[in-house]
Image 1 (cartoon, rainbow, N blue to C red):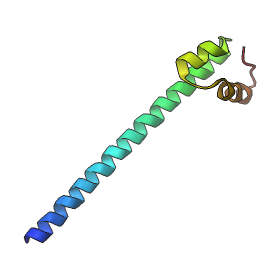
Image 2 (cartoon, helix red, strand yellow):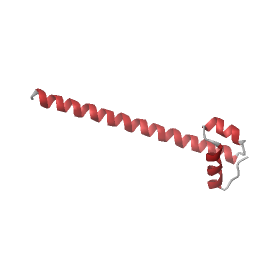
Image 3 (cartoon, one colour):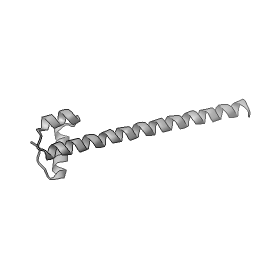
Length: 76
């Protein structure tokens, strides 16, 4: 194997590792977002105050109003 070929293979392996790491990171972010959404929905159903839901989920009040509306609920 030539040095040039070995270098290219190493570069491809490094690129593959970066892509895998990015995929893992993206998956983790999506999982966290689903958990936040689930928590917000549960708290809305339980009629928790909007400011409390915002505190625990990080969602803005406008976003919580959208979520509540989509659920057919009102935000307290």
